[in-house]
Amino acid sequence: MKEASDSVRTKMEDLRNNRIPKEIKTIHLIAVCGTGMGALAGMLKEAGFEVTGSDHHVYPPMSTFLSEQGIRVANGFRPENLSHRPDLVVVGNAVSKDNPEVEAMFEMALPFCSLPQALNRFFIHSKGALVVTGTHGKTTISALLAWVLATAGLDPGFMVGGILKNFNRNYNIGTGTYFVVEGDEYDTAFFDKGPKFLHYTPSRAILTTVEFDHADIYQDLSHVKKAFSEFVAAMPEEALLVGYDGDPIVRELAGKAPCWTALYGTGERSPWRIENVRFDPPWSRFEVIRRGKLFGVFQIPLMGRHNLLNALAVISVAEDLRIPTDIVARALETFEGIKRRQEVRGIKKGITIIDDFAHHPTEVRETLAAARAFHAKTRIVAVFEPRTNSSMRNVFQKVYTGSFDDADLICIRKPPLLDKIPAEEWFSSEELVQDLKNQGKEAYYFPDTEAIIDHLVKVAEPKDVILIMSNGGFDNIHERLLERL
Figure 1 (cartoon, rainbow, N blue to C red):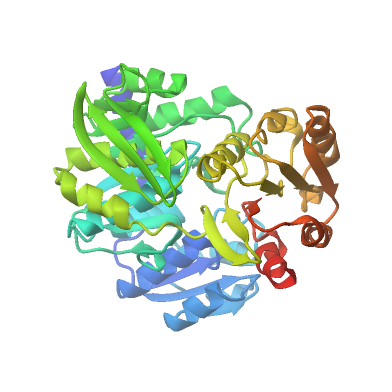
Figure 2 (figure 1 turned 90 degrees about the vertical axis):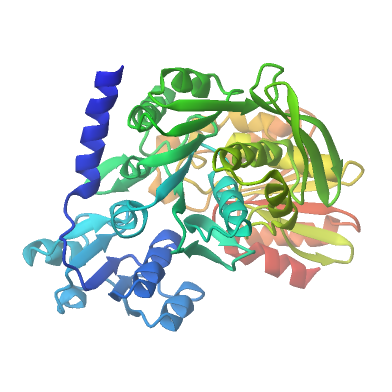
């Protein structure tokens, strides 16, 4: 096992270090308006580089943010956007090899790299990387961990896939010795089809769950498991892997890890576990037991069992970093959350509109269960848009029927981007609605967002909680619904 791990680590180190020259002053980012690329652009600018970018959809809020940072952004991809011959080009993972700027980049023989390569090279490699991986919970855990470190006065660097309300941004260069980053299993770039998380060398890592997702790049669960196996095998021997023992694959991978491990969960034998959970909106209160003894009592303004497990993972890492328990408790209590994660967008006529990023069947189920725990006597209206490359495919067609048990009324939109998926793989919202009706649920199919809004305006009642779930903007349904109400 040690020889195999050493081989994987050598391979990963070579991957992280290639393509980036030593002397760099000017950097251009292709597809700069994505959440991650925009954050990287801001970080590079703050670090003193001359930064430019381009994208084919340049509009607020990202265009405003980049402009405020003094970053010139070209609207559209054109060879002349590289006429100043930048020292390095960072290529976003949604960019294809036939992109006009990519073709010009090759013709001009400009050095290039991916987002995770740049992030590691300029901001992470000299610090202790705290990498959060797994199918679910990465953004919440990364945000919580960053806030715990900040509360402890450690000024961490971080890049998170959502806007942290405590910071009003999703990144920070940081002056401290740690950098928190989401270890995404999605592919890196057109020239590097491996997962992003292989570009980071963790001092501590959290592994939440391993489930099938990203059906556009992974064939099956075994394929996903292989990617996470490579990540675990590449961890340094002195590192710490914190893993959720309620997931059998995580347990298996942790058992083969070449490094230290700490498991967390809810079982009696979990080294770190939660007990005596009590939901008292807006608080979730719980005890943490470590190796059979009470470690501490905590409360957090987030709802749901899954968020308590997220907090438990952070507590485990914080203990390894020797952060005092009282500081960790204060950080959890003062955590303001993340935009688009259980975010209350408004209350109108007693009707609460909540926005959430849930899209995988497990996430939809857990998000609704969390809402039910906080709103036990309230009608919960679930509004779901299947928009991801996985949810628009029929791979989860029947699985979704078990995700809406805690909803009283269900509205399912037709997938908005089916033209990107082969017709034989299309997910059917009509079929899902019929399956839910067969289970005795009140469920409705809608061809577009406007039809959903029209329906909700008619049927919504005071005290209703309308939980809107999508990984996209959902045609600004939240603000439009609030206006109509």
